[in-house]
Image 1 (cartoon, rainbow, N blue to C red):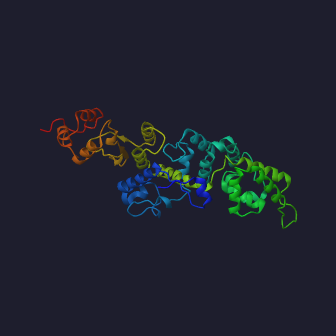
Image 2 (cartoon, rainbow, N blue to C red; image 1 turned 120 degrees about the vertical axis):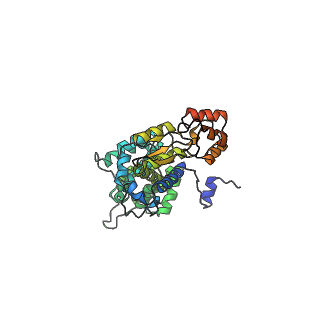
Image 3 (cartoon, rainbow, N blue to C red; image 1 turned 180 degrees about the horizontal axis):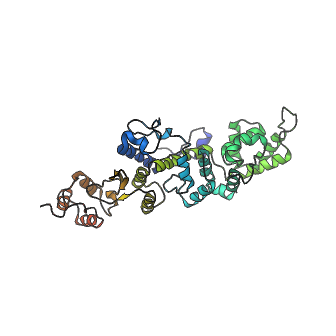
Length: 369
């Protein structure tokens, strides 16, 4: 194994990747498996989806990367701010921002994730975005030539890509050169300012022969560029995070029981299980008690009489249970009685008591003779 400084790697032109483990990906995969297991060919109708939806395969497999990004029921659910379990937008602060923003399209999710950072919050970038989005103020594009790339953020400079476009339009540099300038601005602001002002003043509109940017334009634009250093966020980064955000919201909206089972099994978020169980009840998803014959080592979806779907608690919820004990309990299912559990699963006395206390033995007869 070799170690290199990240800046040296950058100077060498090598690609640097940050590889992170995201438990939400496991949650999404588990949810899809439960949908297929429970519904099979009826997956589309079970989720109130179009029966001819191409992203739902005949066997119930859902191609999550192919779902439409303009699903109105999903955005309705997001706008309620009941976002517990939704990737990146479940924290108290995010729920407040979601409530104020009221996202109605995918680009809003990208902006939300990009704005909810210390820099933009301190740099007063959130309020202008919200005011312009909701029509309280007119977007300020800094210059008419910036309108085409600042429309998606209502005139607020949020992303690194915005800075690249601004430098391209003002100084006439390529986007690659603009990116180098953006990086240099964090270290040598004064020299970049001099070059920016000189080249922008020399930028002539070919149709009129006049300067394209006035001195006032240059002053306003530079203030935005100068203050961007600690605030900016790469839009591609925001879009990458917005994808599982939307996918998790879509699954929670259309398949709440299966999604809750995935959340409880993989625990991807910031909240304890008791709050996830409360959210399940709010959604009308019954939580089924521990049962030594029905519970497994995961939270599983079960179909109840009448067709309602519930989530069965996992054997892992039993305090102090070990992996070998779980394996033995699963291998012996089903059991005919309490004595049968004790003989074949060989639980410790303490585990047997806990199984009784949590009600996992309630469905069994006390006497197998």
